[in-house]
Image (cartoon, rainbow, N blue to C red; front, side, top):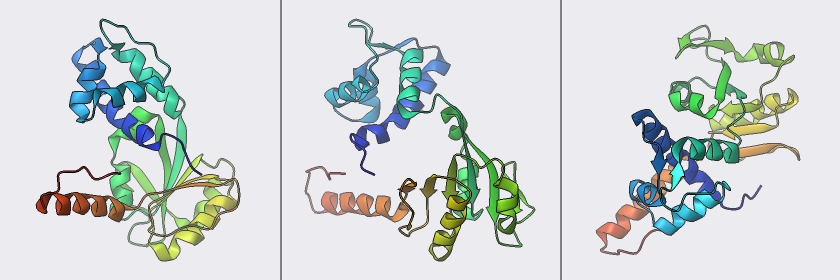
Length: 216
């Protein structure tokens, strides 16, 4: 599925992070110039990004911080609570379980599964790890909205098949493999090595003396 304005969508959580901090400090208004300086991007880019929310600004003061937070949350669909199950409680899965910002996005991981006897029964960041063999029994009556796959590539397709059989149509895939899913199932694939590749593309350009920005 192709999403228009994907770079803008990817910038929205960074705006939110800044806005949350401003709200905590008691600041009432924020301008595009302030956000542009924080993000290190052109002022006009911030104006276009915020325009996607439909929130009208104040010519003199900019935007009310609380209103802009609400507008971005609505744009991203984070104004409503969403539940998820996570499969694979290894290093990456455990890191996601410890990511506190999910709470700010109304995104809650409600259950965690793994097939390793060393992990089953453990509690990681407040989440008990259940046996993957029991996933159908535990989730059949009330499957969550999103399935998060953090298993090795060799087992990712099997896990995806299980999630889909439970009626889960939205998958966040951290396994380095392309999943085969039926129509109507949406997969967002995260490739950590892709970010590393972009970083080293920037390093190579910098070390070669090329000052043109790397397009992302």
